[in-house]
Image 1 (tube, rainbow, N blue to C red):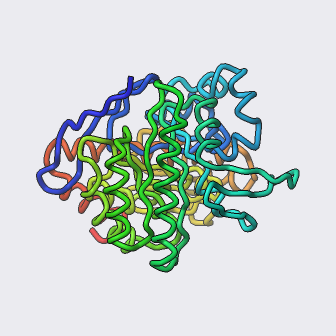
Image 2 (image 1 turned 180 degrees about the vertical axis):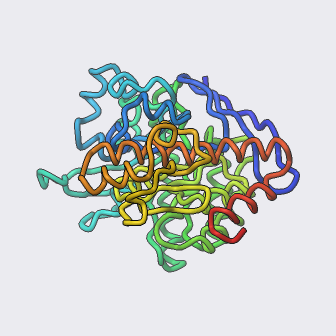
Image 3 (image 1 turned 135 degrees about the horizontal axis):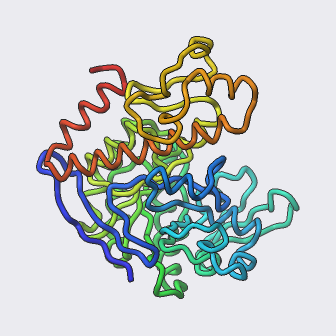
Length: 369
């Protein structure tokens, strides 16, 4: 029901070309997963998301538990039917959201926090995270972990990974469905010894896939690259590798270069709502007056619905007029940009040419070509 095939290793780097088979379809890796936190990508319909080339999307356990509740989703026939998305879905464990809350109480068994609206105290631990995700019914689900803040001391990070490893064992015990793949999450902050220790022990638990967590909490690209450099080689070669919450195009391509397979981030849709769009020559801000009479597409090389049909001048007008359509068209373009980048990365890996592709892409994108 769940299978990962490693199809090709790039000769010029550690980049990998793989294929994930799930109950709701096949995922070609490396892949970017658009984020639909509440069971919907902001400003986009499922049909529009599919047209961008999305193979899998991500939804959030914490937010869906608060509203509408996993019980209601189950009555609707599960998350796929509830949101009318027929392809694979990944749900995160809620750990990142819970640990980013200002008022929470962390214990050895889980976390106590307050409901955002009612103020009611809620407990979330490994067993609860598994029960919620089993009920939602996503294809890939995540173990409950402690997301270590940045910066954190070595002593704090060491104690934290012990907790994450205990919780991972609990998650395995309470994973109840054979049609879901449970991924373990490697933590350890920026510390090489802790990352490698956590990866080794987590690998011995034989999860169907593995994630590197805690790398999108403000550490920056250089530290991100270091963490992936010394963690990815310690993850099982024959299992998918997921870098959580990453990120910008340069973050993703540098991490593909280091052997990571799966990525997610809210950036494409979040930036779209603030008029920031991605192009091969870098980001542009369409509320800028220079685009008022610019009748070129957002990116002349792009084949998305937005670029095939509308100009920068039209989007500038939509943003200035506060029209909802501005966010929709920009989100379509940004998500398509990310997925097209991943498609080109896969082709480059198959051709044993990923290093050259990354250099050319980032040179043009960052203006260093």
